[in-house]
Image 1 (cartoon, helix red, strand yellow):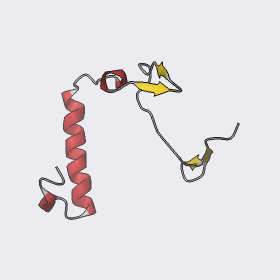
Image 2 (cartoon, helix red, strand yellow):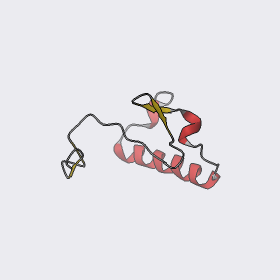
Image 3 (spheres, helix red, strand yellow):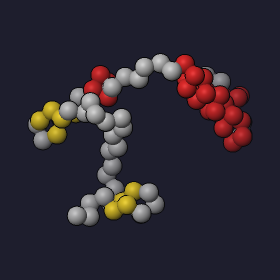
Length: 75
């Protein structure tokens, strides 16, 4: 939408207003969400991983997340 109607996104307030409107409409439609496994399959070390139980997957190539609050690779 931003690319199709760039004139609507002229300020931060306008952006927030538009995104709030789009989010509200999406929330009220209450359409069933697709499972991640319907969108793609994940293969790690040559084995397919069952991702049906997950809502989100984050792929990172950094040492920490959340402004350094979470050290991802610390045992």
